[in-house]
Image 1 (cartoon, rainbow, N blue to C red):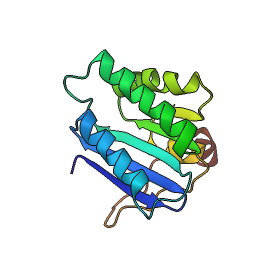
Image 2: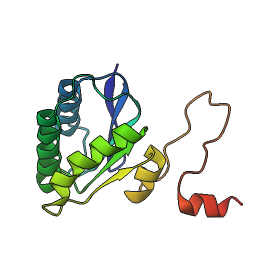
Image 3: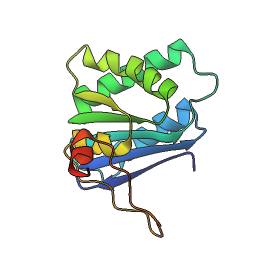
Length: 147
C-alpha cells in the first residue's frame, strides 16, 4: 500500500512508500484523522522518507497541499512534522510548509522520521520486527551520544 497510517500514543503517522498520488495522500490523512482511534489534537508525522515524489506534481498541487497543512495545523493537530528522504522531496515539502508557517502553524521539515519524532517530542519508533541492525543516529544529540 503506497500510503498508510498508524497511531503511536499522541502521534498520528501517515507513511508514504514508493510511488503515491497526492489524492491517495490526502485521502489517507483524512482517514487517519477521522479514525476513532486518533487522539484529539494529535501530533502529525507525514513520513515520505521511503517515497518518490509523485509524478505529474504541479504548482497547483503544492499550493493545495500547503492549504491542507495550514488547515490541519490550525484546526486539527498540535504540530506537524514532514520527513523527507531526498533533496527534491525536502524542497517540495518546504514549499508546502511555508503556507502553514506564514500563519503560525508549528511545522517542520526534517531529513528523517527519527529526527521528526525527536522534534515532536515523541520516542523513537520501535524497531521493525526481524531487523538485523540498529538504526543509525540521525540527530545532533544522538550523534553526540555516540562518539
